[in-house]
Image (cartoon, rainbow, N blue to C red; front, side, top):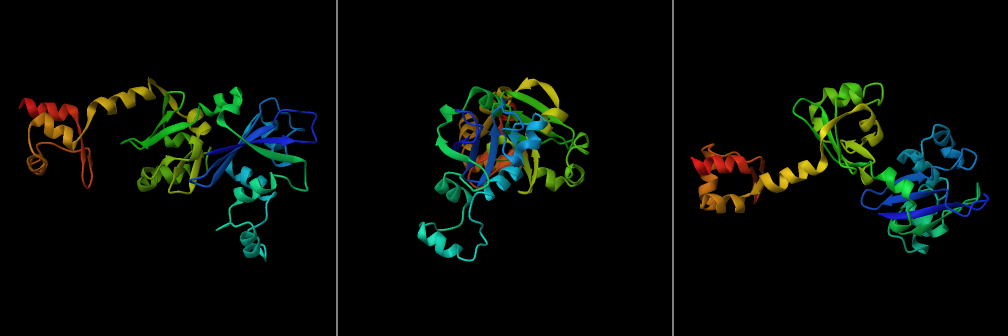
Length: 271
């Protein structure tokens, strides 16, 4: 991830108005505005968010702001421009960094910064984003957040809050495709449907658990093939036979290693 401070030369303000985060693997973007910003100080595209006291700018609006400031991919001589700047392919962020984020419509510009330079209010905001999200057997979502909170989200509560919630609820394969989006800002379904983490927190029910409980369980109670063979004093071939005979059941089957629950291994060992 790369981070950039956003400044506005037109304002009587020495500090940044916000920060742009670029997630290189997914080529996605998020802007976090400083929470002391008012609507008149915010860039035009972001004013409606600030009016509603929303300082996290979703990916779509962030991308629109970026595209206002860079050469469009459909420009007639884009091949020559890429060649001139020794770019292998078109990437908005490369062009944005090249120009310092400047454009003719305003006096905003960007400057790359380290994560240590991000102010506390924005770090606190980011601490509430997702770290893990997975479906339950009863068709809900279990969401683990960076601040260690755990929420169970019934999908019918999301209907009316997100246009694709009903479709996700009715199609189990779509629900099962869920993963955490870049930076933990969204839960992503089928690589295209994105539900913001704030909606999940607002509509979910907090459970009397913390995320560390799940990690502790996995660390203590999930065993790989090698460890199971050691505990049972058997070979991999013998373990494969036990699996075939349904005397032990892997929770995940891989090409080289399976994963098992410690309790089932200990039960088999005792028998």
